[in-house]
Image (cartoon, rainbow, N blue to C red; front, side, top):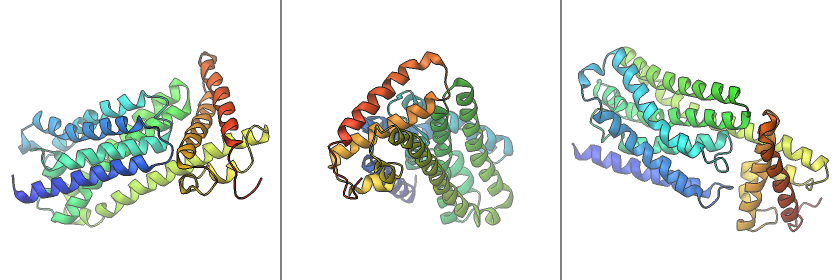
Length: 312
């Protein structure tokens, strides 16, 4: 293994750890969320070597069948880590959480992509006579974008409530992720430099576009559900200026200390997303309704002690 590959892998691992640090900075996650994030990151880092060792015949990787098979295998090996965290209902709340955790899994996969002896992305992009840096950029964002799509779909299935919609969103995200990865690699195999002139730009744009879409959905859910609480005179009106918008919640100029702000953000998100999910599920989930009452009262009590600078 060349020193260049080792250096690149080390730099990408540092990028993955930086992403983990960014995750800690995000506004409304509990302390135990770092444990789940580490699980996803490490699982992503292990998935590609496992897939690589299970399929050593690299001569078939340059065929359409080889690309499809290996792409599907690598995606399926990423799933257990995401599904494990998805089971933590209080932590994995919506699409933004799914995007973030999926991206972390992707960063973990990127950190070992160039160490795996027959990673499909490394083999196709870096050994198919492709320009090095465009291929490297595309490979990085493919490994991040695909699990981000799958994680986002899991987040949407959580909010959708009901088993039918949950069953719909998850395979849809899986299919989109598989299509993006396999389709991009097949385009590189067939069109070479022409594909690499476009795809390295489209991949990061798609990744950031997915985040924007998830944030917009989160803002809509928080705005709609908390507005109802304001109309019921349960919560103060000023929360509609802050809580639906992640940047404003993080900024911290609305009268609460950091520790208290994180608790309030956590409670508001739980309240809004549980209400949205409860609207679409059956009576057997009445316990979620009781938790909404508990969250509503707890959030109201804490907010009464916060002095918002803007009044109201």
